[in-house]
Length: 556
Image (cartoon, rainbow, N blue to C red; front, side, top):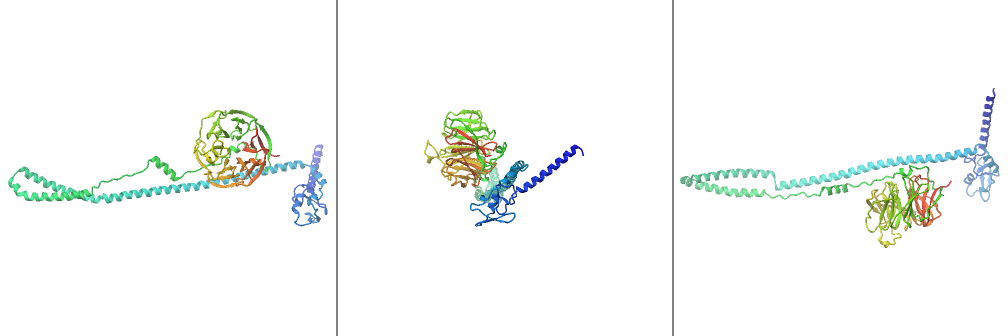
């Protein structure tokens, strides 16, 4: 055996011994109940066996004074203050701390648990994707059948009406202009006229010849024949006039442009939308864990009143509106100042990014939405309020680029609150008014978000979230008793969460779309607005009467 082989055999032997020691120590440091590494090992006084404190707590029977050892079944008396008063095995803890590769094993287990959670999230995402696809295709087939049925019924109705009109016309023509009677009378009249013409020609010839004898001879016969023909002519003329009714027929119908619109209206209109998650997750590097979220990772001091915020899905830039100075500040996703521009006039209340990444500022003074490019240059684009009772208050955009405008009576200084109609106005991405809703269900709407085919509206006076379907029909509300003054609202599509700023409670509350509370994130100030960062790992929050905004992330 050479020196190298000896060293190799020695290393192998040492590794085997180490493995044996690790195996023995693993057995000694493993809880007999949960089969995991001890967490706060407690020594049972009757047998000296060790069990995790939490496992012992789960083993305690109600109204029992003893506890049975899971290894030897020996009974130990419970201390008056519970299993926490059993002595902790500090020797075992030190042994665990000095177990070879313990830290490495713990690190691997930690990474493994994180990976398991991420894989579960991936599996859940695949399942949701499959469910969404199946639901969409099923709904598409159902709507196709419904559209075909309505169209077929409409075509059948039109065909039935066509048959009725043609039948009505035919009956009218048969009654007043019967073809058989017409042909028969025309033949009779033709025969009579021919006979009359022959007789009249004969009489003319006799008169023209001027022979007295022939005139005297044929006078009685011709006069009688002509009188008979005249009488018959009167009868035939009367019969012909009976068949010669003056027809007054007309077909009244609308202009094709009007008919076309009415046909479209009768057939119905499709309302189509889909939550586009691409912009929200394209740069995602992690997920927000709302059970741990709340760590203030950055406070960006603006030096001005931060009234509203918005985040660009395209670049991740943060837009901040200073209402008092009428200025818009743009910050990078890391919070570094990029540029700013001033708006010369108006009562500015909110800010958002359009689908084309333009900056839109809401001017409450005259119900206008002011568009600016990323250089701060004004772009001439206008929207029209549907009536004089609405008062533009807040604005947001959905995944399809629609503009969602809140009309609210709160803080109206220039007109009585009772004259302002509380509702939500929906405009297309190209600024055409589509519809409004909530007039009968909202008191003081503050903000609106769209998620999974539903509108979620915060109502400050009603202290809850009102939920409406895609066409604006009220469905249900939630947050009653959990919210004091809901203001800003945002959607985390990755976690399927609705985020609500509860201003009076100094908290951001995360709900599931059905209204179940996920968690409550306490804040140092009164939160006004919240937005999700473009990489989906943190929340951007501005506060009431504060000259800063904050970025909140998961706690370590």
